[in-house]
Image 1 (spheres, rainbow, N blue to C red):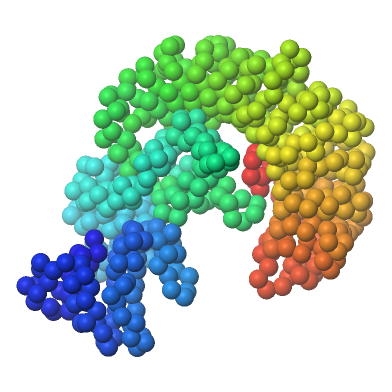
Image 2 (cartoon, helix red, strand yellow):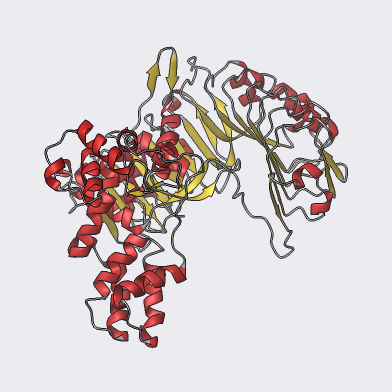
Length: 624
């Protein structure tokens, strides 16, 4: 690679080919260095892929202190960071409507004028269909340029583009070759994770947490033992996702509450088609549909190959499609069931079918039948988006493999006293009632490796919080704690709770009469980095964020629907705070915030209250 670059440089410098045709790498370096020494030059290295190639190429380029420059383009942010000298690299974004049209028009018409009747359709093709991706615009424009220049012809192209396969066209094939370089450059372990993105519908906003847990359920990611430390697959998945973002294969849609992590992501339609095309070329498919994705249109589904359903291991259902189980043979080894609609289990047949899925590892659905659910002893991840009523989870042998359980509504735990072993794999448990059964489990250290815990404190438990949660501090691995105070008319002092020392995030929902003592109790959690208050009532008009030395590690403060007129921050409190978010705090104004939050460089997000809007759900919660 580097020798090819040196030869191209010498060719540009008008060196006769005979002088360098058979030269070795060191000889080529000397020739480049000698020809450029003392001269002012601009060298453009397009589409750089590897750091070691950059090291080799830059070595013979002399620094003449005369304004010479090296311009590098790359699809990988990590290479850009490696290659930069003094300034951060320039990040290219998708083209806007005018930029998209300008590129499209130049490709189709060159120096000619575009007839006015075609401009509106052309803009729609360039921006709406290609979504600002230059490679897509260039390829599509190449196809349009060959067609008749009439409104009917262009309208037909526009209507057919959503169904156009790039593999059916010469320009499309060339574009796929270019995009495939990005896939080929991935590590072998990351390739199946990338291809898996093709199972999601076009324009789908993908929850990153779901995506990583799906990768784990498919056995794409396994834990790694390094000495005494075990790196969990969830942590490896986060790194994989970040690399796909750095390589511009995945687009960030929403960030987490810290402003850094990725909450939801998306892929461009062309990247999705690349995933499907590469998957189709895999000889291991053998005409078997390992993953089925049912669209939002009833009765239709898409899969990567002509379908033999007997080997299906993953089933994705979008929308209200209650007949999904008809498409899967009874003995099919399904290990992923992703029901993204409202009626996935409403029929008795579907509920019975669920019980037969003995290999199921990942289940996402809306309305569960919990007593059937926990007969599935292979389950690792369960995500219940809503529920008609409270359920009961029996803590028994059926939970041995469970790592993540999330339910939007609180569930009651029921302890099976015959079970003596701890549930070592549990990492996420949201949301369960903070009752005596939970207290018994905490007292006996049933969840030694729990990282995220969501608790519902209702009027029945509020008087016994200190008793039921007296062993909460023993959860040494707990990082995130969420407390929902459900229909409680009286105050629950937070000072009664002994919080785990390693907590990094706390979320309070519907807390009643929050006061200075409560904030001081939270401020004593020395590891706390993110504090979120949502629908919280304070006993005063002012929220005092603690005295000197409180919240020593806090970086992010979020307040949503907190009814106060002022926020104060004493000297030495929240000394590391870098980001604050205030949303729908109706009595709060910018002028009533601490001066530090208004200073240049502070990441302040103050959303003016909208009295027409009522908060529904929690779109800022990273784990719901």
